[in-house]
Length: 628
Ligand code: COA
Ligand code: AMP
Image (tube, rainbow, N blue to C red; front, side):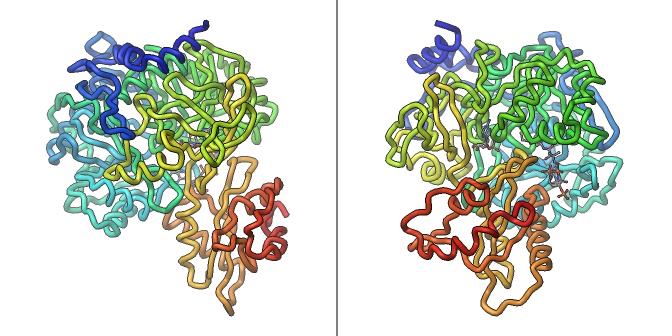
């Protein structure tokens, strides 16, 4: 039996032993005597009597062990033309003083802190300082507009917001303060204070409840780590669901720290002193887990890159970073590789750099299409390893476990179930389907440590959204199959969640905005295939009777309201006027059928369709302007 089989079987047959052993990979104030607590099933908790501090694990313990001079963060920002290295000792100094700042503003254990920041080291400092106090951070991606920020402020009810004066996109600088002010105007909850890190590109005038990061830090006193229960929340990360209201995924302290340490070594084959680069954003789960917590808890060096894979300055940017910092593993979304491939199809720029330090390219966030897989494998000459997971799980569900036991790679598959997860594919009735047959991908409960224990303040929504469709299973929302070798194939979402350039978005929230246009009678937003971004949203609208508007003007107005309310990241660019929408007799819009036609793989038309002629009428329009 290989190491993978042994670990998989042990995690399944004796989870107590397996996870208490894994728990020795981190430092505890009180080591847990119990791994799994099933007393409130289906709400499971891990390490119920353990106590620890996550920031201590990510920072202090490495300095105490004599590694203060090791690089913790390598910051490289072509968009602001700056570079910086932060050692573990420097990180400890900054984090403990910023924890003092937050404590001075009244933040204590259990309080929430919203962090709305660009990709700068201060974002990591703010996260760790919050964790140091036993408080709970909620990082909001900088590409979201005020209304999205307001929804999160209302749900998380933070005492303090931490932000910067601006974010920087290659094409423009985005001042954050007006966005925060507008969000606080829209929200019912009003945070007591906002701390702003001033970047040279934009200087903000501070209001009455605003504080300047640098000024506060000059007089701050260091604050020590506050031990918390393993089951205390570390963070809330909002993610898109089927409805417009984002879901506040909760991450605990103990299970999370254990899963971060375990996965970085066993899945990503990265240990202390290695250089790991997750080219994501701290606003997404990949950023939380693999820019911040896993590398730092493991004593590795994390690369924080503020920029795009192309255009800053060119499609060689990623190879330059790998060369300059001797990166051992790169983790990015397939979109990033597709963007590079589009600009530099023969990888001529790659030849200019020495990327011999690179051991593996990890891909996640969206489906890794075989073309991209082969291009990357051929040119980088390292294993290209797909891994599948979600905000909810916080770490890979399926992967090729490079540190535990590398296995053959099959293009199009993120390989096998990670130990601790029991993945199954079921039909509509919840019966397991044979190997090779497509169905809904579910995970048998309980899921391993680090996965979400609940949604913030809403156990019932957690149960209703994930645990009720198939009794005893967590519904991933993804469809796919498992082949005869146990390799999982994730083929796409079964719900209205779409993945645009690796960014998870809800078509439901876009529909709500499109529907509010005064001339729109009804609408559907669906995700259609896109060669670069994997998927992009396309809106189909039926106008109110007698409405008279130039389609180009309508499109401009709707695109603007999506950008204003969700953010540019929604990337909705196309609005198509249609005479009607295909529906079932009970009035449900046939989005899946529409998606199939738009992508050129027509689905069987359901027998419950209300009026087949509507489908015939709109079929040519579904292809969109560019494709038709
Ligand atoms: N703050 C403000 N605006 C942001 C933003 C941020 N943090 N991130 C993205 N945006 C804006 C962009 O400027 C763009 O605006 P525009 O429509 O005015 O040009 C829009 O949101 C869409 O952004 P993006 O999806 O990033 O597209 P792009 O055309 O700017 O870049 C790629 C295309 C492929 C280079 C880019 O999507 C990419 O690097 N993708 C990798 C994705 C990734 O790492 N995902 C993380 C999940 S693992
Ligand atoms: P997020 O919560 O933003 O990480 O998005 C999670 C969703 O992205 C999953 O439910 C999948 O639909 C998709 N996804 C993530 N990784 C992969 C992958 N490796 N292959 C296919 N789909 C993926």
